[in-house]
Length: 211
Image 1: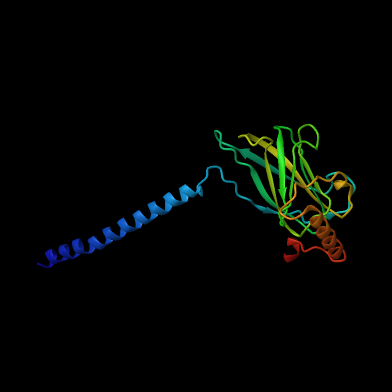
Image 2: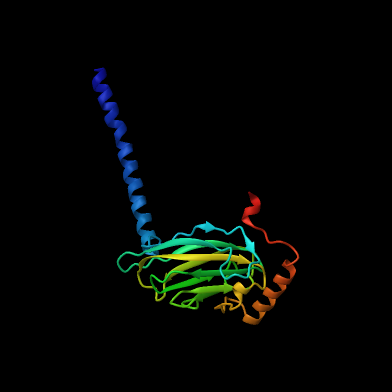
C-alpha cells in the first residue's frame, strides 16, 4: 500500500512539472521568434574590445611609439564581418590609425564618442587606409572598424598601428576629413575648437591612471 501511494504521489507531482515546462518552452520559442524577426540574431555580428595605448608621444617619427594590433577578418560565405575595437584617445590629441599590411584592399572607419565619422580607403599608399585625427574631439573610446573596402566578405590577416601624439604632431600632418555628424559643420568646428582650447592646460583622463 505504501509503495502504491508513493507511485501515485510521484505521478501526480509530474503533471504540473510537464505543464510548467510546456509553458516555458512556448514562451522561449515566442521570444526567439520575435528576436529573429527584429534581426537580433544577425549572422556575423562583430564584438568590440576596449584597448589603449598608454603613451602620448611627442616623437616626430611617423608611427613612432605606436602599438601594433594584429587582427583577422574571418568572414564566412557572403556574410561580411568587420573587425571592431574601441581604442582610447584624449581630447586634443593627434590620433593615428594606419593599416600597414597589403594582404587585401582594406578600409578603416573611426567613430568618435560624439558621433563624428572618419573613413579612409588608401591614403597610406598601396591600398593601405590611414586615418589621422589632428585633434580628438573628446576623451573616450573611439570605435575603429576594419573591413574590405567595398564591404564584401574577406578572409585575411592585417596589422593596425595605433598611436597617440601631442597636438600639432607631424603624425597628423595630413588630417582625414570627417564625414560629419548630426549637427551643423560650422557649429561643430567652433565647439571642437573651444573644447580643445579649454582642455589644453590639463592632462586628459587616461585609463592607465586608474591602475
